[in-house]
Image (cartoon, rainbow, N blue to C red):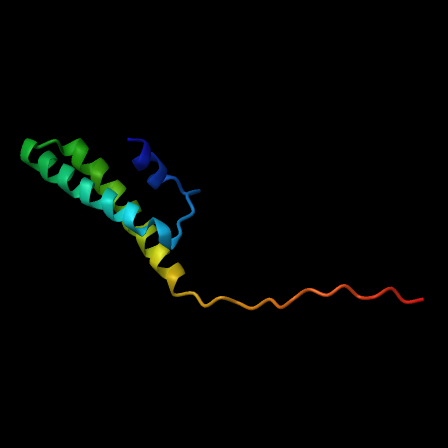
Length: 83
């Protein structure tokens, strides 16, 4: 799936707005894993488990970002030219 390929990409930058999307993907993967267990699709289970690991890591990253305190950088000033 396209979304799973994105989840596994180390370049994917997450933000807190993605938490609902990540939760949906996790829920879907858990349902697919149940089915794979019933059918004994061992390779599928392994792939789903790997993707679940990435999803949970991305979720933790997004939650961590919600706990960050904004940093005040101040207003930049331009020095007046000396004459």
